[in-house]
Image (cartoon, rainbow, N blue to C red; front, side, top):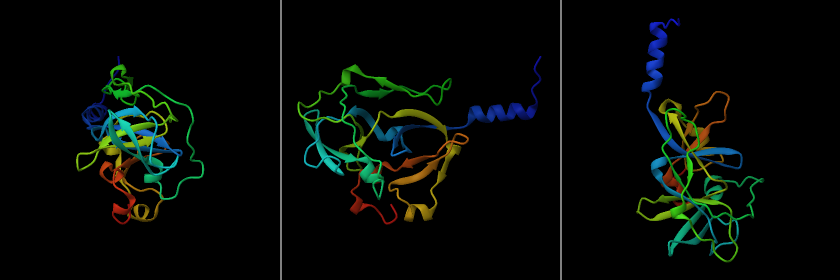
Length: 208
C-alpha cells in the first residue's frame, strides 16, 4: 500500500489549486507566440487580400461582406523580417473555433472544426494562412495573419515572467509583454499584447 507524506500531499494540493490561464499559441519564423484566449474572437482561413503587395505589412480582405484590415503578424512583430520568412501557396477552406481545455489533458490542442462558420475563398489568388480576429480598443475588428492553425493551451500563472527592459528596448520583437516558460528544456513563448499588436508601428510606444 502506498504511503503519502504530508509534504507530498501539500505539493499535490498546491498543483491542483494553482491558477491557470488559457492561451492561443502559434509559431512564426521558429519562435513561439501566445495571446490570451479572451483577445481572440475567432480563427478563420485567410482568403484573397487587396490593397498591398503580397507579403506587405497591412492589407484588406472581405469578411462577412465588410472590409477587414489584415495585419501581417511577421511584419508587425519582428523589427527585422527573418530571412527564412516566406508565404505558402496552398489554399484552405476550413475555419476553427476553440473548445475548453480540460484538466485531464491541459496542454492539448483544442482546435475544433466549425462547419457553420466556413468562409468562401475568393475566385482569385488566395492564401493558406489564417487570421486571428481581434478587436481593437476602438471596438473595430482586425485580422492578424499567421502561417498555420494555432492551438489552445492552458498554462499556470507561475509560468509568466516579465520581459527584461534591455530586450524590450533592443531586441528584434515588438508587442511582447512577457515570457511564458512552463516546460522543462522547452523554448519559451512570447506573450503578445493584443492592444499593441493592432496598432501601427508608428503608434507603438518607444521600446515596443
